[in-house]
Image (cartoon, rainbow over all chains, first blue to last red; front, top):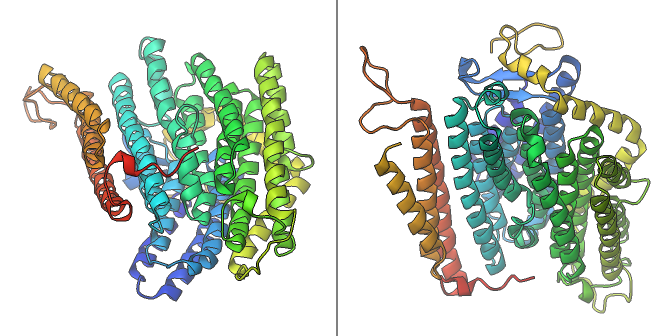
Length: 505
Length: 111
């Protein structure tokens, strides 16, 4: 069978089942957890398949490309699908403990799986308009999830988030219209050939910049990052972990995919714009985080800053830059999810999000303190954690590409990152012990994901050699998309399984 | 693209941007919807919209326009409808929780 649509279909099936089980909460939670595990297993299976047999293609409805819509799983897509599944599983597990403290309404689990379906679809699609549709699915689910809980702050954050993204969607349609009018196709594999003969590179550059505007909104690049501090800090903690850990990476993935595959010819022309946006994001995020007393808002600004580093690597588009960006995506997804979930423990125990009012929580939450430290070291880029090697690779790539000013800026912002993260750890967990008795203990459902994420970071640290080799392979496949294009457009067997047999497309 | 289509798109974007800049949140949401509809019309225009030509290939040397953008627009209209519905409910909850539906009621989150 063709495994490519499996993550999408499993998320959809789980979402549908969960919506049917609204009156039976316990069953709904179990179906949701099992569904997320099944999606992760499917993502893993797909990962091994692509590793052995190259990019896998699924032709939707039998309409062959370039007229029909295809789902394509190459190394970059499946790596991100697997990463997203793992973070989603852990966030979902966390939410089972977290939501019991609040009024657990029944729509959370279906919405979460629709969000996951949108994420997997965005990573796996091979058609530009299908990318728009999956983006809308994941955005609509995320609007509802950010507003989940109905407090004034959450509603305000959701309105800002939704407004900016609605404008982004309008620009996306504009860009799709322009692209279709210019080339006559929307299939990502067919576009490079059509764009090459499509006339002035400046028109193509203009369309690329429109796409950069849209995906920059999703990835919270400066000057489109205004929604992120509000949305990520007001959302329920497991949703913050998903938003910061996975959703902004979808924006970076879209920039990378469009730049590498579709707009490969004019990508160098847009490089100054992308590098400028990335540098500004780094600075704005770091400076914003330095000024925060609210722990979740600090982590949100930190996400903007780290996305700046990732977009820097993507913008450089050299092997080193891409490898650094991919390792930083892995590091940030695990590390920021860890930080958000651990901060959730602290907020839960202290009853406030203001870090200056917390203190001495190390006595009450020793495991959380250690896990938070692991997250701090990972995001700040302290060796031997992968964040250090990722940022070092990006610095080297910047110097090799002839941008010493940007490299210095990146290093300075890395120092700032270290400062505000370690200071946050100190404010929350060190200092005088809390004055009153902590009434709530943290349930096991909330503690387990934090421990697992810390272990995963340790695992990545220990196996950094193989991970780096894998990411080099991913980066190479992204930079030379001939295999992708050949698999999609070449006739005959499209989904070669490990046993070499083709299946009906 | 006919002149009528271009003028319609321009009017929609102009009115939409004007409404987005109002104090009242309902006008904001209507303005956003108008901007989405303008984007949909641009997408229709990219298929060679020329007035009285159908997006179907009829027998004989009759003119037609590209049906694909019109199909894309149908999808986009449905998506826009869903998002508008969500935003209107969000607006209702904001007016319940904050006691008003103006931008000045949304000033809690700063910095």
